Image 1 (cartoon, rainbow, N blue to C red):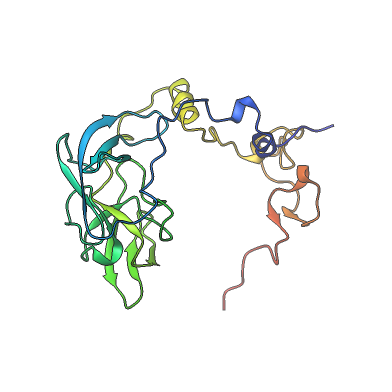
Image 2: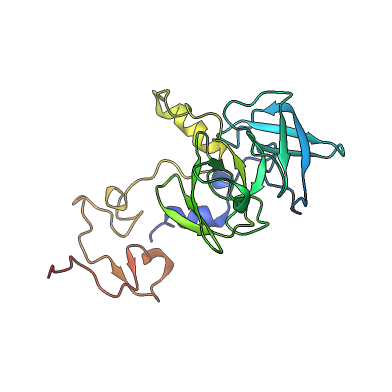
Length: 239
């Protein structure tokens, strides 16, 4: 009898693959309701959160409400940030994409208005405003893919701090284990052909699949790896 695949064991939600309890100090999102006009906030504290690759900053607004955001490269305690559709374009400020000039570096970008920020949030990450269209804003993402977004989607000005995070070599696998475990990410990722036959359908000594990787949509979960319900497989003929 075979074993569960690794992705099936992760889906079960056992302690080995569960996010460490109380490990994330804060959820980083914009305030739920967009600001009409302008709100002024001050950076009062930086937070080192093991659950995020980038440093966080605590921002206190004029009405004494607070929010935690990703810190941009170059900001310091005491600096002011602005939020709203009439806010100044300043480091760390939160503006709708329609109010940000072309060529500006941005991060923590909403994919849909009001979702709190989903893209370009990793340490050192940033996107670029390419152009403003009639009903959209064209944004160049860190992956070099350009997408059109709603002009009312919000983003922060600048690049995420901590860009040198990956410059230091890890040196040993034990350190890498704790780095990935802190953020509850899958590591290491082993190929199926390097596994034993009991662990994966592609496993065995041959180090190649050994059989077709096209699988029926109605196959049992333990066999559902490879090209699931693929229309075709193999190299396309040119011409």
